[in-house]
Image (cartoon, rainbow, N blue to C red; front, side, top):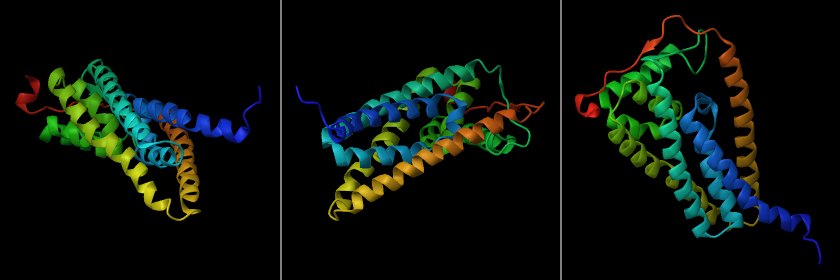
Length: 224
């Protein structure tokens, strides 16, 4: 039986690799603090572009649906972590991302808007990771939180994946343009991930501030 060529194997593995990377990144970004440093938006758009070169529209829609569910699941993990935070959010002295200013800004957003802050947080990279933990630490009603998280995920993941997929259709009209864009976006995502992980390690090496940021007081109806 003839063996498949390396090019054929790469074309077969490409879409599967996209699925694995996207689902892993989306889950981590929505669940854990390391997600503060990952290029989630860029990755979703890049995934759509790559799938446009290797797959059909149903495959892109399927990834969008599954990644949306993973985003909701990741936020549930972040919420549970927040519930165990004992009413405080630790920040890093001299940090660049996990700073008192950033956490206080996210906390103020949650305090003013509650439910809708969780929805909108999907579109604000660093708030996207902090919002679930702040909602959990503030004891936001679990059902309202889950609904807000789901609405935000449905508005966020499919929009970016399908933007990349259908936008690539216009690029494909010029033979050399789509492969070039795929290469550039992939390199940017890889570099962004490497830089993000390095920054995350640097952030964790900084001392924890002795005065933690308090959790937000949510609007009354968010505690129902």
